Image (cartoon, rainbow, N blue to C red; front, side):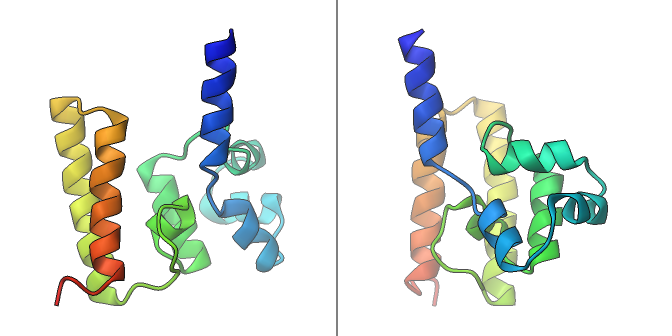
Length: 127
């Protein structure tokens, strides 16, 4: 039981930015849900980090708020990537998700790799 609680608390520390951005934009959960064709309850669970959106829903949310998926997920600290960086990051993320699923990499390894990519983009190491 203690392990479950600790995992729950750890997961809660890695909050996404859905609620933060929704409140900044003054959008209700109901209006957001209707705009991207999901339920209000799903939005509530995503905001509380009790459920993880599918890649399709992440993209719909990011498009709705005009931010990148990694920013919305709380993985990077900047909102706007230029079009090239966004396309590159999205392409790499999709390719890595395929690799992670195929080779069953641990979530910790995936997180380290994605953070390294985000750091490289953020610090202009791709020029």
